[in-house]
Length: 223
Image 1 (cartoon, rainbow, N blue to C red):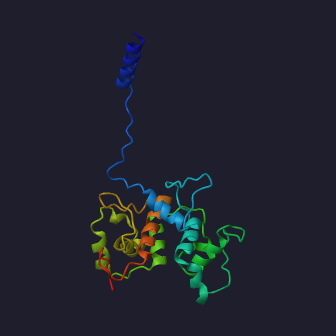
Image 2 (image 1 turned 45 degrees about the vertical axis):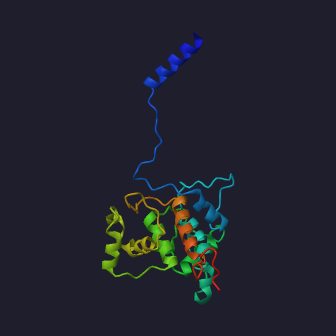
Image 3 (image 1 turned 120 degrees about the vertical axis):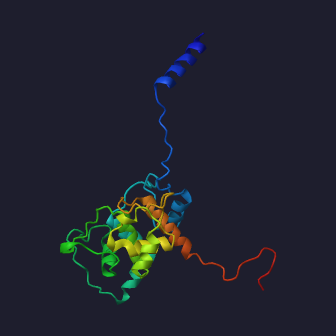
């Protein structure tokens, strides 16, 4: 009898309380696979937090982006022919943990300051900003405007890309560095997350892997 009452109570609860579904929207940007995150962790471009979690949904700040790009592109090596004198940045004192990296991105012009040489190190970046800065470090392809328009034409929200970021985003699309939803939306005005950046970096790292010059056919010696 007690078992019957328990079953009836459960049925009543299911009828009166809606079940909350956690299915991902078909238009959501796919969650970055763990293998991509592990790739950037193994390459020491990004780290887990002290509790061991990566927190892929946390937003990227300008200071964090600067430090990651310095490591990813060895930007300190580009300073050989650049000015050695420090750039005065009022809101980034030398005690700031990202001070040296911010100096490097400013001197190499991978990132720029705002009016009054302010850097706003804690300001979060949008996807358009983050992708454009990444492309600046990688090398923006100088596509003519017609080519840029053609590359972006298949993306429904390309109209939301700021004019200054169009060539850069056309570059990362061409290189297949960018994560998009199933409809091809770029979401340029959304804040960039750690997962977004990890995806871009993992694709870049994959591109850097040396490919065999001669296709290897199993069972057949290349010599």
